[in-house]
Length: 557
Image 1: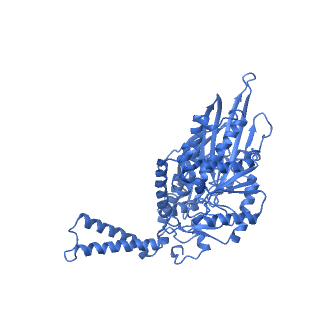
Image 2: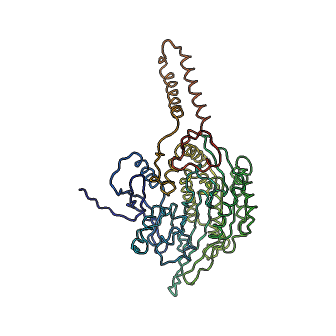
Image 3: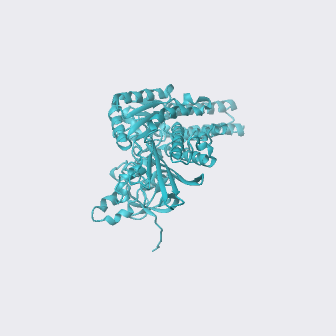
C-alpha cells in the first residue's frame, strides 16, 4: 500500500457529489502580506480526496471537473487569525473571542456550503473542530507598504464577492426574491499608519477604512443570449420588483447605513429601460435613507473627456465630508469615527464604468484621509507623489481586472485610464480585444462556468437527482449544423487551394456555388437560431426562463 505525506494548510470543506464525498484540502498557499500582526494568504493549490476511493463514473468525473475548474480559476484568500469576510468596522462589533467561522459575514463566506458538514458536526461536543472550519473569500487582496515624507504607510485594497446570486455575466443579472443582486462586491480601502514619538518612544497606530459596494440594478431583468453582440434587454413589470428591491435596500441600510446610489447606465438606447425602471423603483420606495445620483458616463465622458468624472464626485462629496470613513486609533478606547453611509455604484455589468467611478471616489477619499492625519498638506494631493500615485492606480486597476474576470471572463475595459490617468489608443485596442474575448466566452464557455458556481455553492445537489444534466440534450439536427458549416468552409478552401478537386462531371462553378450556398445557409441558420448555440448552464436553468416563455427549450426538460 502506497503512503503519501501531505503538508496541509487548511480544510476548504467537504462536498458531496453524485456517488461520493470529497475532502477539499489546501496544499499550497502564498503569503499576500500582513494586516497588523495577522498574515493573509492566497490559495495556490487544492486537492480533492475521495472518501471511497477513485470512482470512474462519467457523470461523477464531470462534476469533479467543474469543481476543479472553479477552484483553479478563482482567487481565494484566507487568514488563520484575521476575519477576511468582514470590513474592519464590522469586526469591532463582533465577538472577538468567537472562532472565525462564527463571526464570518455569511455573504462573503465563500466556502460556507462545503463547510456545512463540519459546522453541523461541530455542535457543542466537538468544539475542537473550530480550527478546521476556515472561512475563505472569493475576492481580491493587495497589501502594499509605502513611505511618504518619512512616514510609514500601508495601503490595502480588499474586494469580497458575495456568494448569493453569484454567477456569470449573462446568466446572473438583476435581483432575486430574497433581495440579493448579481455581481455584488464589497470593496474596502484601508490605510494603516504608524507614528512613533521620538521623545516618548510611544507608537501611535491609526486604521482608516473606506468601504464601497457595487451590484446589479435591483429589479427583475435579463439579457437572453442568442449570439448577438448585445442581446435584447428584458425588464419585468416594475411592480413585480418592488418587494425584492425593498428587501435589498433594507439589508444594505441595516449593514452600511444611508445609501448613496450611483447609476451609470445610458439614458438612451437599449439601457434606457433599465434607467427609468430603477428610478421608478427608487420613487416607489420613497426612503429618506436612499439618495439617488444619475451620471450618464458614456455621454459625459465621450471623446475621452475622463476628467468629467469629477462632476459626479463633486455631487457626492457633500454627503461624505462627515463620517465618510472608519477611523480607529490605538490610544483611544473606542473608534474615533464610524462610516455611516455607503456609495452603491452600478452600470449594466457593474464592471468597467463602475471601476472608473469607484477608483475616482477612492482617490478623493485617500487624499482627504492623508490630509486629515497630517501626512499631506491641504494643498497637496496624491498626484504630487508619483510612487503613491502609481501604487494607487495599479492596485485599483488590478482590482478591476479581478472583478471583471470573475464575472465576464476577461479583464476590465478602460483600465488604461485607471492605471495611467488618461485614455490611450493602446488602451482602446486592448479593450477591443477584451470585448471580442468576452463575446466568445459569454456565448460559448460561460454555461459551464455558471454550472461550476452553482455546484460549488450548493445551488445544485447532484445526489438529489436521477437525471444526467451534463449530457447534451439538443436535437441531432441542431447539433450537426456547425459541422456542416465547418465542412463547407473546408470544401471552399480546398477548391481554392486544389482547383482540380471537383468531380469531372460537376463544373467548377457549380461546385463552388453549391458549397457557398451551404456555407451561407448554415451561417443564416445558426444566427437565426442563436439561442440554441449558446453554451447554457446545464445544472440550474437561468431564472429568466421562468419569466418569459421561450419556445422549444427541450434541453432543460
